[in-house]
Length: 345
Image 1 (spheres, helix red, strand yellow):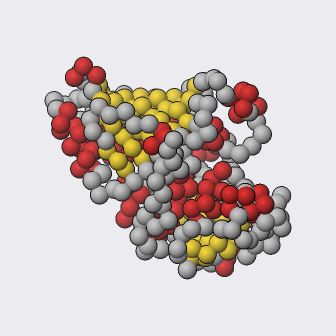
Image 2: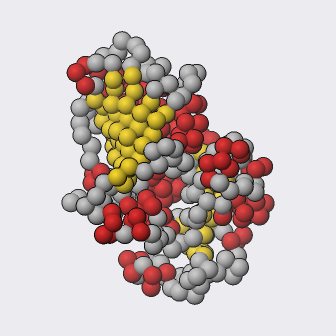
Image 3: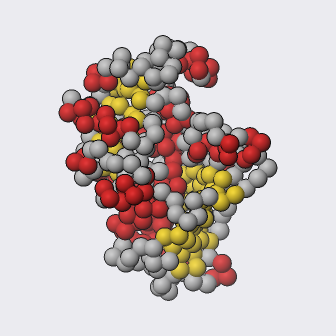
């Protein structure tokens, strides 16, 4: 059994980890930390876990995380970089769901997140945890930088086109929407029910912190200079993410050939569903699951290709992806504990 610790188990990605790991056949939940909720049974905070999780939250100074085989950080940015060095030195694997190790360039990280990076020596060691595009490196990793939710959709959607060299990498446009849970479990005016419900808005238009992460990862797939315009939006639903990705074709290619690019790229991927050309994937078809669905469009047969991508922002966009990485790191079946079918309706 894999002894698992979770730092920051009170947020949405934390409870999503608990939901998935509580039924994982090879996992023993060993420690779940929360300074504020020290001693409170996890199931008292999250009754959905009654009968599944029987341990209590522990203050960080009381939980001996070095006894774990792997520790997940479901925490704000900056926490993992402070604690990961000691854990890694003790042979504990680390999976960070925040952004501490997603950006290799320290200066770019510090400019983007407005905090100092206190473990710069770990940046090169960290492996980016997007399984479908980085599987072999993840298998060998001790430190995983779990991708952001938006970046997951953009990379899965653009990668086959960039690898094939059929689009202009200098003019990528991503129009993306996320449910309110993407903002985290916190009291903030902009995500209150009466503020977010029956409304729709863009945010981070002048520059979003996921842009440097996504651009750097996309750059791996092309010799062209990547230029990405990324605009996120908040939609009045709890879970779900929909990304509409635009690119200009630079080669004469048929719709059938475009479709084959994606089908060939993801034919062996159990968590990426390439739908028939011209389909319209819906967020509800991925709710509660680790599945990402996508479909291609080409308006009027012109030189613009559109990729529609949907996922559950808390599962494939966060905790499910982290568990997928854990499975690979410990030599388990990649889908173990992740075969939940989406909730419908």
